[in-house]
Length: 485
Image (cartoon, rainbow, N blue to C red; front, side):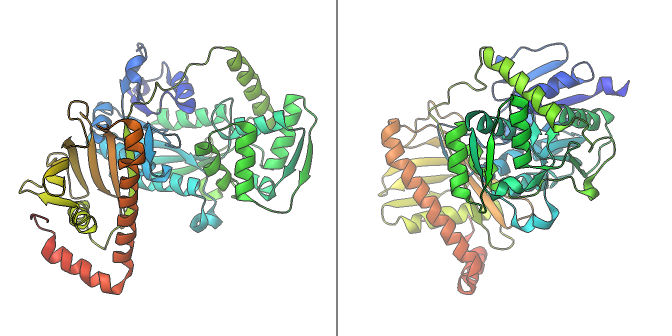
């Protein structure tokens, strides 16, 4: 049958949803499981593990080779380097853009993406988390590969993020004062129903660009979910409503009580004010309608969580390298390319840090950043082969601030965000030459300050009438291959 010949690549295969999806697909298709530590996993007759760092477009292209369908289950809430500068939203832009471009290049016939339900009436005022989920969906659709976006609310399972936080609250607090967000309505869905929806779309193999909401049979408030969870746990709990929504207090409360990292808690709490209910226009019969009631799903999740806690937990990731990832988003003047932004940044840097730092660019667009004119701090080699109009890539190859013997993957890129007059400036896999503590309190802070000032500078360029004329002049006269001093 056709489904036996399908080759399905799953990005995020070692994560909570990914691990369970691999079990569902076993025996139905050939699966390529993608993970940063894929080389440490054992291949089977139906699953081939591949190591893949989706922050690298080259890695993404190699990993999707031979795939018919690419499943995207990636989120960047947690740090991916020892020092991570930048927001999870901007990290997600890079990951999604690399994945979508790689899928297009490798001839993938469909991308299946699991995101979050977007409340229609609040699309212009979304939380950071939901806005990022929607932006990822839009970026995945910016190329020529059909994308099926499955949108789910709170997923009921023993791991993940939202339900374990909720169950920990109920376990640990006999009395809870509930803020206003606990009266928001949501349509929780069991993990099994999410997996059934994913496998149904994947194995049906009818590539299309569509949006499908999925939810369980119960529409309820977070307060009622807590009450039902207490019942499932066999706990007697008292709940008192508070007439306010305090974002700061809610975040601190959840973080302290559940001991969940702030990188997960903070974005999720911001989303709780939104109603997360299946939208009629995104309903697909046979896929959208989960069948497992909340109470049954909660009891199953609690049982599974208890069994897992008794086993020896294995870390999902090894220890982080002594590396740096720095990502910033900037505004772009109309019609600017990433390449123009890169060359303008070099020019601006020399002006901003004059007379201490000088930059030069040769005829091949290679750049040197020098200190007081006679010592090269960093040398950036332009990659013509890997660059396009919308992405300028430079490898960090030499300089006083890095060790070329260990910086085999260090690179800096300027990337235009598809569909927006914005760009991402990112440094990946950079290994500083100086001792870590000294680097952390000096070079790292200096870089963050410089990028912040450049963000402000670019914002001014795009909003001021006077500077619009300056931008036009720079575009016409200055953005040529030149020596910048």
